[in-house]
Amino acid sequence: MRGTILWTALGVLGVACVRPDKAPVTADSTVTRPESTAAVPPAGPPPAPAPAPAPTATKVSTVQGFLAPESVLHDSVQDIYFVSNINGSPMAKDNNGFISRVRPDGAVENLKFIEGGRNGVTLNAPRGLALEGDTLWVADIDVVRAFDAKTGAAIDTVSLSKLGAVFLNDIVVGLSGALYITDTGIRFDDVGNVLHPGPDRVFRVGPDRVVTQAIRGDTLGRPSGIAVDPVGKRFIIVEFGGRYVLGWKPGDKAPSVVAKGPGGFDGVVVAGGRILVSSWADSSVSSYETGQEVKLIGGIAGPADIGYDAKRNRLLIPSLPGNRVEIWQLP
Image (tube, rainbow, N blue to C red; front, side):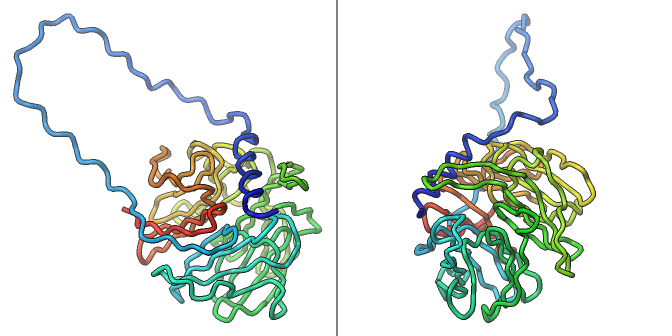
């Protein structure tokens, strides 16, 4: 199953797996203006001009030539972008996934910097990426793998299969130094239909490599992207099968709702206090820092696990079905 089937299957999931609305009920903010019975006053001075529209994101470049790119990560030390490429079925242990190195100017430095089946590397369907010092961590179906971020050499593998990991998706290094990995709990059958054996959860891998289940439950809504919010000292988790942006702290039994949007969420980054989220439901990236959705970018098919270049204030968007990465300058 190649990119077209994957795109179709994930598109179906984004529509079909939306869970029932569980957000707190809010008061209706619609205000009905009563009809005025007063005489119309004489014309006064002309109204003040409308404020200028808020600045929008602008596209810097488009980088082509990837094979189902799922995640982009900026290594600020090397000043390089890593791109994970599934290259086939998202569930197949075919050992043909790879990770690319791309320069900030959009030039592909090494398309297959880390490649499954070469130099002792095993890499099947790489998705989320995270950096811990010089170590690049990768979520790969039911394991997480560590590589030297400078040389690409394999360092370590931690299996989560004994805990029943189904579809490891995104990965982040928490404030304590532990790894947190989302499990979306989905599978694909032979013709690309999406199944949800579950469960939905987030795993924790400690510095001692001990694997535990950090949180589990339907309130996670097929969790996809995960990011650290250092100000709120919490994790931001987005639902692929629901419509919620969630906040969660280790030890909490359930996440809280931060915001609601179109759903089909995939990637999330916390950038300068802004929560930026990609959505397959409407092919967009939006900001949710105030709890309200503000569209920043639209028209991107299958925007997957987005990255952020803090040095240049740029958003890095992989289009999984488009086999490209788009680089956008944020306002």
